[in-house]
Image 1 (cartoon, helix red, strand yellow):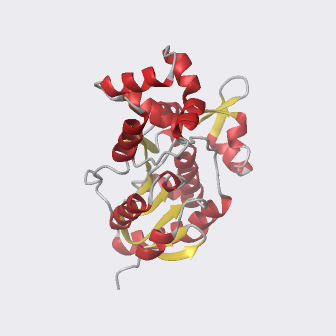
Image 2 (cartoon, rainbow, N blue to C red):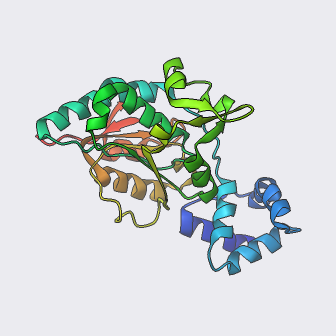
Length: 271
């Protein structure tokens, strides 16, 4: 596969726009993968990806091109807003509707740090009442290795450096040298699934009270961003919230939703 063909495929399959200096960028990002998989050069790796019937090698390559570094409680202002504004609104809405169903989606979940942080925030807010709810977090990503790590729930100690102390005391446990595991109670709150955000999202039921889709649109071009935001807005329940990354372009989020705070948007509630 020539480099331009790979650029076209990466864009058409996953929406990723590679920079003009794509060859040096790919060499840098894919050096470790080439060594692990036994490919001597970039051309051979891309050729193997083209003929890989299952598509897993292509996904492995794409995973290396995106930055999957994350940690718990990233962007504290988002989780403070979730706990002080969004969850109280959801609680009140559920009481009015006599419903138990809370729908929250971590749309670019990487290894699950964000999704578990959301689950911890819900458990902390609802307290003993949480057991009466049908609550949890859908965590999706294109990176299969990251999803597998998330399901295991084991992370280096530094991943927890920003979480509130009472979360650390309640929701994580030692798991060996310099590592901790999210407790099973919280791991069971999160469902990990593979999903390509630029593919059809019709399989999702929608009606999400909250969607986190942070630090992923930076990889997309304008038309792809707009289509994604349109889809996310459609999948939100009236009054639902969309959280994006501070580095994500907010232009289209402002076009389809009402901005509440930096990188936080709300779908208008029905009157």
